[in-house]
Amino acid sequence: MRRILIGVLGLILSAHGAMAAEKLQVPQLLGWKVIVSLADRNGETTELIPGNEAAESWTRRATIQAFRGTPLTAQAFLDTVVTKTGQVCEQASAGPSSLGMVGGREAGSRTVACGRYKGDGRGSMTLYFVVRGKDAFYVVSRAWRGEPFAQGTVPVSAAELAEWVAYMNAVDLCDNKDPNRPCR
Image (cartoon, rainbow, N blue to C red; front, side, top):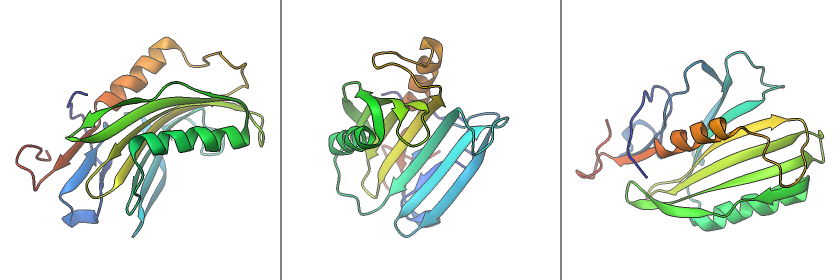
């Protein structure tokens, strides 16, 4: 997975705050706004939506998370997401996991679709990208939410999916304590 650094203002997650050496660098989404920004001793979460959408009625969302003390592997996390989606969704499906490395660390991705959530009746499709860092377990996701859809149907255009993949390919894990992976 390639290393591309694109405006990372406000979207750099570090495992232990300002003094951390390891950081997840995520591309900036121009025109998007932060709707959630939380940090505590267990981790960090930032959620963004397009600037013209509301937190209650979003149709596109990006979520960036860092979990400390999570012993999961990339595959185990991706499998858990599929299982949990199936519990709350009618017509849940998932693509195969794709496993690899980012910044020298285990990584993986997977698409998960929900034709109709049992709660609000809407459909969703999410691309998850995870990195098992040295200091934390990082999760980046891009989601679509809208009208329910039939299993086997892809509600997101090929062009948008390609943009999601390019976004995930630009995610990088750097470490200021490792001269081979410095943060910029």
